[in-house]
Figure 1 (spheres, rainbow, N blue to C red):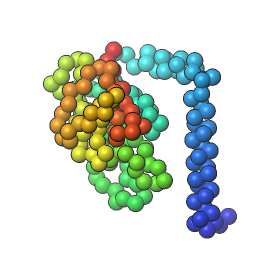
Figure 2 (cartoon, helix red, strand yellow):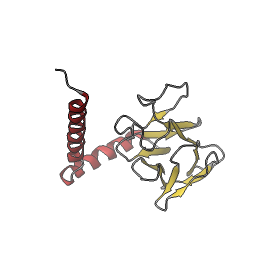
Figure 3 (cartoon, rainbow, N blue to C red):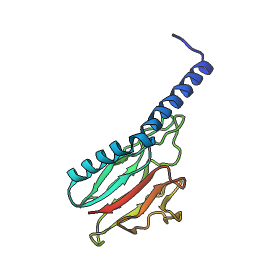
Length: 168
């Protein structure tokens, strides 16, 4: 099947929309008990430690914070040249084949020189910033910020790419 670019873009847009709606159906009220049970089971498997938990639709990771720094970002879009930069966790926030809020090297996390219930969060010079929630405090680029357990932060100001830092 061969489509002109206009027809192809309409098909792609329609299918992406339908897929997103199917994804949202999973998060409806009827599935809350099942989702909660699955989350509890996963948390039980992790054991004790420091964790950054992705809450948004594009980065649903559970990241154990250990002795080595962690870099969060995204892969190159089709319109960008690949780079040699290495990220530990990728957030796939591309919308219409380009990034929305996440930079290729967006932020880093480490546990150096902090208490057991803290991490250091550093914005790595991202375009849209790393934000502490819920008061939308933008972190100064390249300055480590101590973050306490229970804190929320987002990659970009919208809160779509939201993460929770917890210890247990």
